[in-house]
Amino acid sequence: MVQSRPARIVWHKVGREHGGPCGYPADLRLNSPEVIASYLSEKLAGESPNRCHWHDDHTIVELPSAGSDENWIIVYFLDRNLQFSMGYKSHSWWLADITTYCKTDEDAVIVRDIFLDVEIDEGLAYRVLDGDEFALAIREGILGVEEAAFAAQALASLIADIESNNFPDPRLSDVYRLYCPEAG
Image (cartoon, rainbow, N blue to C red; front, side):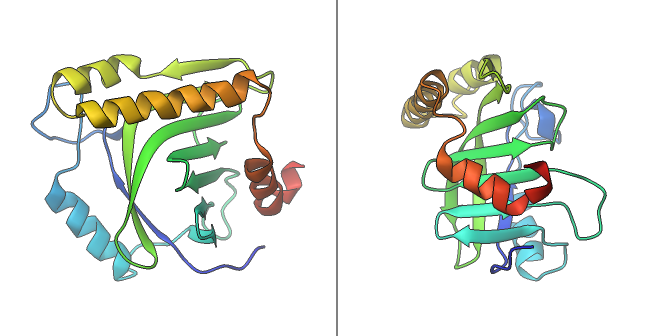
C-alpha cells in the first residue's frame, strides 16, 4: 500500500443521487452551507473514518476502508476539475464527474459536483449523464453562466480525450496501477 498524507474530502452535494432536503426544485438536492460546515468540522476533527490520501499536490485518492472486501477507487484531479471512479457504483468501467474544488486548509477540500457525469466503458464508448439536471440547475439559478460554461468546457475536454483514445491518460492509469495493483 502506498503511504501518503491524509486528505479530507467534503462533498458539496448536488443532484438527485445525493438526496436530502434543500428548498430547490423537487428533483434537485443541495447540501446547505450549514450542513457543509458541520460535515467539514466533523472531518477536520477526525470523527469520521478517513479513506482519502494525497497522491501529489493535485491528486487525492480515495479507497475502501482498511480490511474492507470492497474493490473500488476514486481519484480527484484538482487541477483538471474532474473526479474519476472505478467500481464505486454500478458502472461498467470509469465514471467521470465534472466538479470544482475549494481547498479549505492544507488537507481539506470541498468538492462541488457540477451535475454532468460521463460513463465510459472499456471500448471507449461513453454516455453523458444528468444533462437534464444540468439544464434545470441553469434554469433555476443553481449554476451561474460562468459555472455552466466551465462545466461545458470541462466536459468537451474530457470527451476530446476519450475520442482521441487518450483515456485513461497516463496519469490516471499510473494512479490506478499504483493503488489497485491486483487489477492490473
